[in-house]
Image (cartoon, rainbow, N blue to C red; front, side, top):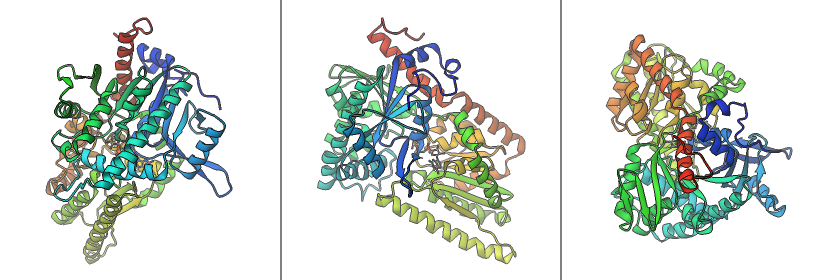
Length: 530
Ligand code: GDG
């Protein structure tokens, strides 16, 4: 399938939606989006057909939407056996890029690490080591233990796979029909920029870190060579983006502490290291309202909505998360339990629906966490089943929906009275924004101070400290009893903010800085943004 012309939006809206400098930049450029996981996975069906399945998580949600605006190539790991077969066929046919039937407008190039290297890179270093570190999740007297196996996973996994990514990015750049702009995503790829620079010093490299950047002291849980390599990798980029000013500031501090040769300019948010200057910028990520609404209005979502009606009650609380320790799911249920203890008048009148996507099931911490969730839900349901029976009603206070079903999650967001987002730490949290956009009942958002979204939405949410079970129980209560006028006002402000600060704006802000940089480097080629 032929890909679309650069700059042409699928539904023809690009021209009205992007400012001139961004449109001009996109018309001349091919975005090379680089992330661990691609936008789709390929599977072989029972009758031998090849089917595609959308990848899960916030990075995919965001970048799939961003790719709508541009000519794009996606570089990602082959995840499934069918992905690997396709990658091998491409290699044999010397085909540089794969078109994706479900996603016109951008193409794919696979990175194919061997299984052992991938395991070290993903299951030992990226998750849990880096993810846990960046979300302050370690129980530090006991973990992490950086032993010889961790070091082996670092060298033969993380370093090796980052090098492979660099090679594929360089190949994708060679196949790009226009000037390549490399957009690296997240913590799996901290070292890739170093290796890309070795091969193609001229490429424009932009790296967005979707997750928090913790305090420089906490980074000391990683040995110096690892944290130096990570800082050096990020400084091989031209621009490094973070979700919040606090994360950007922490990054500058971390560089200052670990690379004494680096010149850190805090005022301009720039670092010069070995003659190369990197700009450190803040781009709070968001959602594409048009796309989110389209999925929420789809036939699939409507069907779910009808089915979910049976699970609603006089009051309905929901949460939507990957089943992930940083999302603080267990404490959310403990707070709900406490709410029911303090307000027995709610018995039989409130339901908590939790939509959880199993994630990283190869990592022990995640399997254990899902077990903990099941255990606490079982305990709460058993406890209140008795209380309800005394009053002669059959009632299950928690309904757990475990599985990968994005339309179902969006369908549920329409009818909550309270949405609980109590993550311990979160780069942003797109669920808070999707809920604010889609909800039709002036539902109240309960938002953790630890989520990046707190900086933007906190003023209209009920905010909680994520470890405060008593405080979260109180917020749930306040959310349920809030007067209608106040609910309406808060919901309206949240919706307005999300619509005005959408994904297009996130992308445009980055393009603005990229155009600026391009114009400085080659003033004859682009008009600088005003
Ligand atoms: C990382 C950062 C940052 C929900 N159920 C299903 C499903 N979802 C969608 C949600 C939402 C996305 O997945 C999750 O995004 P979050 O932002 O809430 O969280 P992370 O996955 O941890 O994302 C985060 C984000 O990157 C973007 O920068 O905001 O802080 O941790 O859109 O509605 N998706 C699928 N199946 C489901 O059942 N496929």
